[in-house]
Length: 510
Image 1 (cartoon, rainbow, N blue to C red):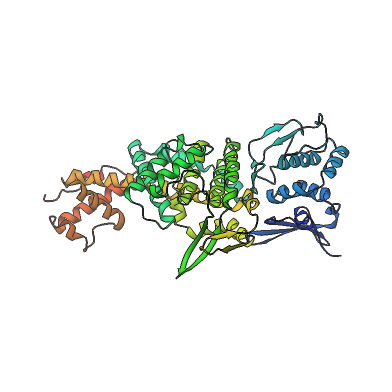
Image 2: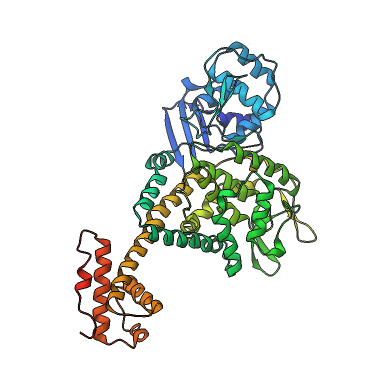
């Protein structure tokens, strides 16, 4: 007996769906129940006893019962399935959870009303099974007695699997850990740390794109980050205004692009390597309208990191502007995390700084969609060396699996909490302790005193090469000051020690 495709695997292949296949394939055959992981894809093996009737309704029921719903596959299935089959299923099982969910999904994705009366019996059921799908905050559909907890809207919706990694991050309360660090910091230290983190995020966001911003350009982006609370991504004017603020005014847009955009690099004279082709210009306005609706739908999402991730990555894939898309994409993460109360007030996680430390991981995350999109995009150069897309591609951007995107952003947020936030507050605390101790010993100019303390923090003291920077001090004086600063820094690292030890050191010249 050979294996047979079941669930969404069968729907995708039997219905000839034109899209990215589900990341999980289910098969029934002479086997035991097991899961096989191969890189980003998984194969689920089931004994034949699990095999459903070999028709769209049978495979749809299997998917609703056993699988994480792949939005591209389900949306395409609803466009081609015979509506009478769904109607007959609901009539046979009028209070069934799976039949009502299928009914809801058909009408939700197609916008067409089936020839069925509103249901009046049966408990409300979630459209997305939360054990198999990460879902949004639900609203009731009384016609189907189904809770609409879809992670998006009919014209743009995402799949996120509740992997063990995501569940572990959810239970780790990253935002609470960040808040604890903030609460335990001295107010003046925290204020300077926040200023540094905002500046670091600005610099890093440009660095990801290998760009060295002018002081004015960096300041404009920094101001935008600080004003994120007043920004509404659902408003076109806010998006366009943000783009105008953060790019060179010669490339400021009046609206969304009306030309074919792509991401590539020069590899030689008259040669360009194309990495990713964005949606066609005739599709971008509707795609951005659907994206805007997603930003509204995901307000109050139970998992703010999921909301921020899918909104931000969907935006960068759409690439609605000629310039500034990447910076807006990362700005959106901060905006959504702040809007949903995940980020401590007046604060931000310097996600771009964490990305700079893992650019390969970031690129690999982007390739989760960009690579399969490129494989399904028919394109050519025209006589003016512009890219022309020859097939329909908008559906590839409307529905995609963002599981690995969410895992990546969770990792970067953890990185910022464990490294950037903690290290910066620690650095400032230790610097202040060393600086204060130094000033009690000698009245040194501020910039020179700061340099002395920084060198002690970085190198444990003043190296022979750096002693020329302090020619006015003798070897003995430098040695005494080093000891004073090191002692103060050590006391700051170990508060249990006597913080006044540094004050008992002999002064230079005594």
